[in-house]
Image (tube, rainbow, N blue to C red; front, side, top):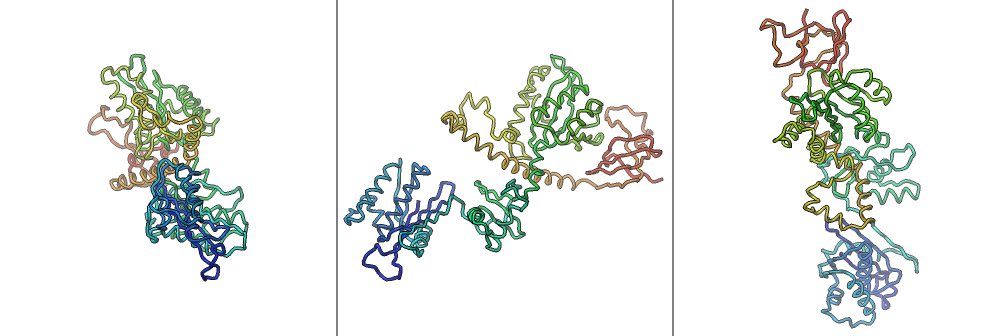
Length: 531
């Protein structure tokens, strides 16, 4: 805590009676994470400089006890006050004795305090606040309090040139006006709204915002991250990405089957949080897939916007079509024989199989017993694309692992020491921060995907077609172990006509006479046909 007091006469001349002076005090708190809390008060009665210094100390100590603070380091540029509080100087002046006694009483309520004398330039911020309050011209018996609330000091724009934009969901009011406009106008032109309430709201809130060169508004979070502010109409667009799409796939058959006769794993992965659901099955039927979607996706996470799956027979049935129609879910089928089209599901399949191999090293037929344990390990592991665990993005906090209970971790020890009310407040804070956590994960995911796409595209020779082009398609099924009729067997079949062009290099084909429809096929399995 830095403190300072200032006393000056209204006309600049020395006053015989200090009561005729104008006095003010300034207090600056610096938290362990370098956050700044500043207060400035104009005193209702005049006083001497030393009395103003004591007023500043007392006001600061009272504020510190309200926060509350147990340990406090105190810095002031008044050598007299500091050494009197240390006990090095005796308080001889009668008018200062009540101040000293009050300051001692407040200091005794802290567990530990340290008091230091510093030069005026080190105490410049508190000195400026005290001078500001003392210089205000006020009617007699009129009290004014200038409080710069708990906030972070705005940094110069040159220090935030490496902003990392993050979409922030924030709304101010229910009208159609863009909530960002008042802050942008104030930061850019210094103009405030006409409404008194909005003037206060904008003036106080603007300290948390930064306006970048291109007119984009960013908000500085408590951890120092600069978050991009978005318009109200984009809120649903951004938040809808949570559990908006799932990728489904079938793992197996496992040969030999497990001890209980299970041969397959039906798995689904959320494209945003990377949360995964999986069940062991003895046989794959469309009715089982339909039940899995309802039980493990819809009933747990709500109705998804879309589900991506391959062209396997269990994923093409009337039962599934009825389910998707009922809940208005988009059923997207990936391109045939092109694993990247449903890359998330394929990646999870590999990860899950690796986990199961490590868990069933001795008895490989017991993999079905370790499936849920493998899912637990996956859900609580840090995922590189989102820089978070799937568990934290779904529930708002990290899971307590079994090992943390057996050998209590710091988190468990802290949780056990909390009261019921404190635990509720901690959980509420986690839930309030969940949206921001998810938006931060979404930003990391987009950056990761762009980075991977850039690396992949460097090695890919782009091949594109347009509607009504004639193409040949690789003869399928594409199975390495498949016996061929010999080296003279054609590797391409067709020609086919491109009926529709999809996003990311997938094409819908029909035969030349239009009587047969070919499922969507990726461009890597096509080549141009020249009659």
